[in-house]
Length: 81
Image (cartoon, rainbow, N blue to C red; front, top):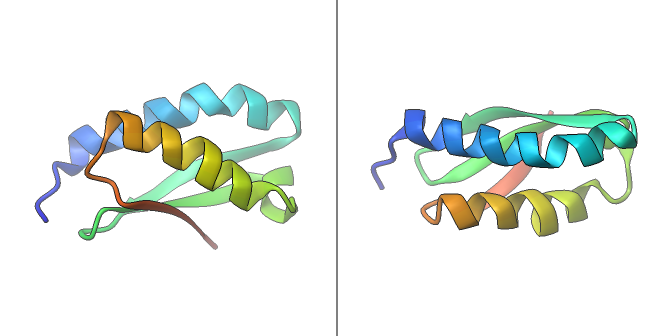
């Protein structure tokens, strides 16, 4: 799969910026770490998100859904250390 990473990075950061106020309200945040050649977005959980029991739901139901809407070539979003 050939991905235009510059364009994807912009789209994904935009998705993150839309979620960020909700994350910040609970003392957390996320940052984009990488987009793999296989189409997996890797994010780092920050602040309260790093040890929140709901963070995986936020990634799957929130960020992954938002990212796939603007970048359907993305196959998954995962958290990394």
